[in-house]
Image (cartoon, rainbow, N blue to C red; front, side, top):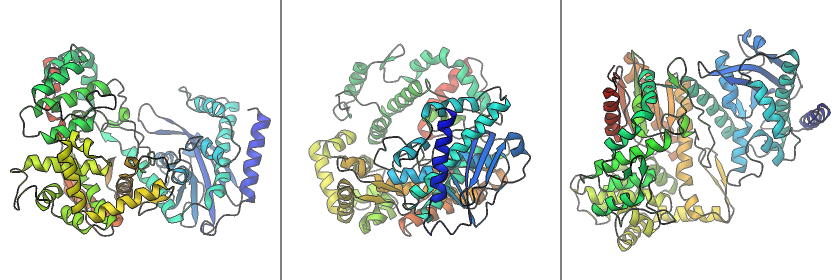
Length: 609
């Protein structure tokens, strides 16, 4: 696109913005500032490094084009960010991260047109994607081409951080084009924007910016020692951890795996892929480990699961650890159809094998707490469906054992110890039903016959009829092209040709994402140090003298957030603390952690310090 064509695009976008009439709900704001930053990720700190900013006020057309030195000279944003003003942006986390880096006060009201584009098109697979250019193209608005945008991004990301006056001008004009795109997009999208949910989503962008900036404290010395030794001791790790004998050298052999499962009597009950191969995904391993948790061979399955995850994910691992020892990853809010975050597993310490979470360690004088909602999906399903029996099952503290007793599978007074096998089967049943599993899949996951699985499904339907009527009506509505919406306004458009199994878990997962957003907002605005959100949990940090108090505060926030999306029903929260000089540890990966540490010690690496 030449200079004349770029001017034409800008002129068209400006004319659209100037001619636009906004709905009255948006005219409550006296000023609407459309803002975009160009920035780099600092290789030393891992935080954003502002290059420039362009801001345009929607009504007046007032423009601000500021280069880095001008931004650094300002003590606060050069425009109104108070109650009467709205900050307009696309992917708010990026812009708000720059606010934090510049020590500017965050705006009171934020509208993220990325989040609004996602919820307006969610479930429809928009033809041009979910980026800014895709949002413009979908609405018939002019835009620069993707190739030119990438060329300009590469200019912004120049490692030398040296730009000529002409290049500075070009970068500012490129940034200005993005802001003018926001001016044009707002009226094109405004009629479908529900203001309260939109402002909540924008506010969540601020919470994510704070969490990304905090990062996760890492035992850098030990992590680097592991990475430096990895290639040399990988074969030895396989020999130590492969208690099942399914590797030849460094290669996993499916036949050896099948022989191992057959020898333990669990081959017939092991889940298979659509092509007939034995499944080796994480969910299959977890289900089988739970099902056979009292069997001696389960230790071998646990290690094999961690080993497979380690070998697979370490090839792609790309943790970005700043000079302050914090690992930072883009959390990518609203990245998924359920509205949950979508961080890259290769960049997020909670993405690789669970044993690697042992590298998470509080700094001296601090502690960490990991807080997660217990059986969140069951509680949400009970609340949204209005099924009082399902609510009673959750309130019992052990919904799986409660069901076993009520359904006549275990006697009154049965315990998880005495009827652990039946409880495990019931747990598989509950989790599988959430994803629309039929009798065959439940049978495979639970290691029972299809006849037994069919019987369990019937008992579940008879025990929780209100839930089943609700979920079937919900799926039918979506399959007929209807729109589903969470308690806090996240939406998905129904698809006539969608699979029912793709839709059954959407209400629970998406309402859970609502709760996560409320809790993240409340916690970060209360000054709690939130290092990361992890699906239905949070990792927080605090000085040791404040750890217990902040953990209690965070738990209260999470309970209140759960009650908001369930209409008052309490979702239990469990908290686990670790105090310096200890380290965070996921119990499911502890055995593999011990194995890896022993291999490092053999190489003279001090692992206890």
